[in-house]
Image (cartoon, rainbow, N blue to C red; front, side, top):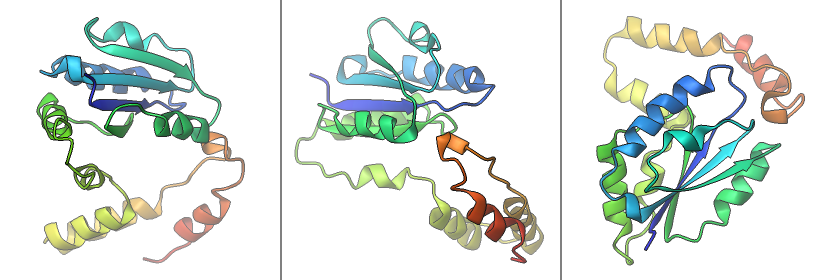
Length: 171
């Protein structure tokens, strides 16, 4: 019985194959292959499924928007599912732990949000873990230089305001 769906989201990166090579390597090393299903939610028709062990159930979707990928993710038929962006990497040991947790029908989803990388978690990590002020300052400066391109993930001008607030920020 499948207990965990891994929803792999690949976007429009020119080097997405490099990301997939790393991720597929670790997915293929998962101990409990019979417990997982992998949904490949792709922006382009890549042959990513060919990189996975034949004992892993795989379904591929070519999607025109991020929201289309999220809708497919929300229709998972397993007890647990995870969204895995192409630039987030887990070892097979982490996947095995997720699968182990998913075997417990009374488990709650509190384990899954812990793996979410977002601004609040990043800021908290920087503030609590990094002690050297110069390194903290360099990280903050790096974030301030990030410019989001137009039509990122087919969102047209949605990031113009974010670019303005980021690129012209002082801290």
